Length: 290
Image 1 (cartoon, rainbow, N blue to C red):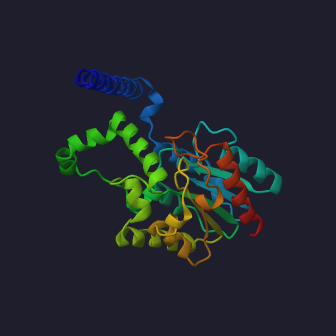
Image 2 (tube, rainbow, N blue to C red):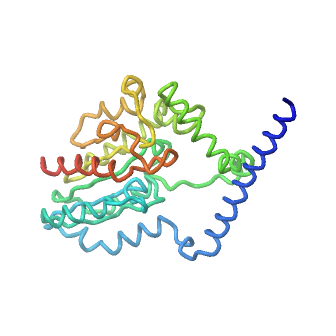
Image 3 (cartoon, rainbow, N blue to C red):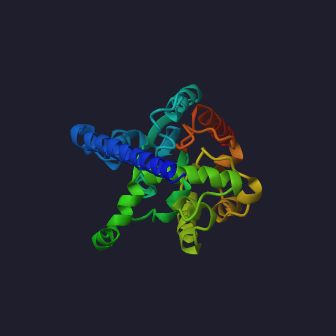
C-alpha cells in the first residue's frame, strides 16, 4: 500500500512540474518574442478612444458606446458583442463605438467614460465584474514595492498554474456542495462579503454613472462557469446591493438572465456564444425602451 502511495505521489508531483514548466515556457515565449505583448491593454484602449474621438464628441448622432474588459472583448467567442452591436446599430441608425478591451480594469473604463462629453443621445453599455469591487475606479493602481517584496513567495504561489488549476477545481466542488465559491479566495469575498468600504466605493461609481446624460446600462458579469442557487445568491452582499440600487441606471445581472453554466469552459468564466446571445438580447430590450 505504501509503495502504491509513493508511486502515486511521484506521478502527481511530476505532473505538477510538467504543467509548471510548460506554462513557464509559454509565458517566456509570449512575453519576449511577440512584439504585440509590449503594448498594454490600456494603450490599446487609448488608441480606440483617440481614433473614435470625433464621433464621441458629435452632439447630434445617436451613439452606442461599449465599454468593458474581456467579458465584452473575449477573442474566442463566435458571434461577439462587437459583431452583434455593429449589425444592430446599422439597422437602427446608431453609431457604434467599441471601447471594450480585454485586460483593462475598472479604473481604465472610468478614465475613458470621464472624457466622453455628456450627451443625451449617448447610450453607454458598461461591463462590471465582481472582482472589480476591490479596485478604486477613480485611481490608477500603484504597486507597493515593499509589500511586493515581502509577499513575493505568496505571489509566486498564486500565479502558479498548478495552484490556479487546484483552485478552479475547488470552486466547482464547493458550488456543487455548498452553492458557494471556495474560500478563502478573492472571488468568494467579492461576491459574498466585499465589505462596507468597497461597497461605498462601488456606490460612488454608480452615482457617477447615474449623473451621465443619456442612458447607462451596467452589465454585471458574474462568472458564467457556475450555476447559482438563488436562495444563496439572495444572501450575497454584492447581489443584494445591485438589486437595491434605486436610480435611473439600468443594471443587468448575468445570473438573472442566464444561469446554465454557459461559459467558454469549466475553468474559463467568460460567456460562450449562447450566453452572449442572451445578454445581448436583454440589453437591446433596454434600447427599445429608451
